[in-house]
Image (cartoon, rainbow, N blue to C red; front, side):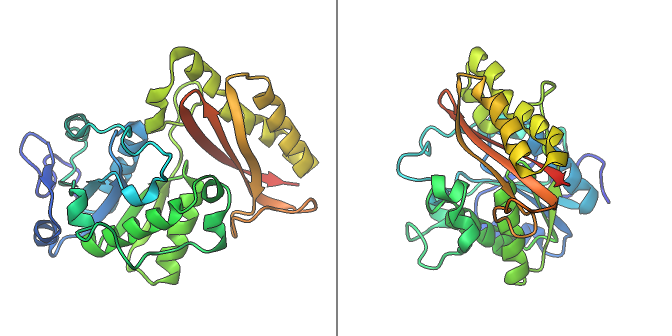
Length: 291
């Protein structure tokens, strides 16, 4: 694979070429082996880890930067969501990305929306889907559009968004998309906090408190040999000790179905946490084995 700067199609200074239209992007990608990293911008080291993995998989890397209105509810932070295309391009300049696809909303949704959407079934209504009704329909719809536009050989997602990963994998499998979903482990700060674009909303005190999410996951793993009740109790005890963390849900699911496990379940399980910390809504998860 081509890992030397500049990447195929990139500027000589390493900065990616910004493409705003579907027609231009398709023209530039014709005949190439492509890895796609879908993002909403406000890039951090977690995104860049996806980019670095993408460079190992394909000759041409495309990063999409599109704040997708379909996945935001009426009370959510669409207008406030951080946007910094210049900063994103600077961050990508050291990672040999060929193209940034940064379409305006009207390019993706020329009629103001779309009559045909992708839906995620029962799993899309649980956990994040219950807290954010319609969110995953918006996510799956825009991912389906991006897969149709870019036609990548590989598409990359981070494990931090575990429910999203599960639903994208099912969509790609169920609808026979000709792409491979590559999942990259969650990237964390030195203190364990999962990297997220929303971490920038945290003030210093809230930032310290937010580490309770990753500590709760560590505590959950320590109780795995005593069953699901011990896992939940251990995680809850950590979260209850942190006054700035308002727990929204703590669930244990079967990673093969993403449905909650019953009391007697034994085997691999994924612990999911969502909490409000100040003005930021944060999520995290980890895989463990229930004995």
